[in-house]
Image (cartoon, rainbow, N blue to C red):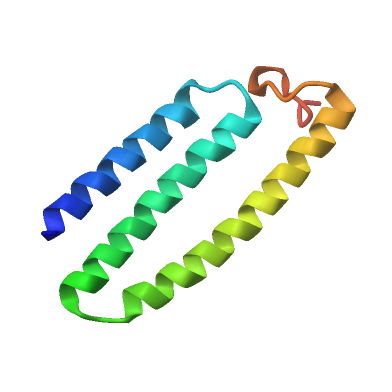
Length: 99
């Protein structure tokens, strides 16, 4: 496949993730949108790495995936704690930091 096909796929995945972040009210849905956007970045890294025949993009992608997994674990832990305290995970009702 040519490079532009991968870039179009990554752009489509990024736009879907951005749409999910901007339109979802549920905190889990927002986290899923962020994950889609990060996966679009990973697709770009792998595509450019393949295009340039360089392993640096692949290695950087592996580190990005590891950081993404940690981000998901921390994000879901925060959502669970907020649900236990507030009994909701709607983003509109989360005002814990207000004084």
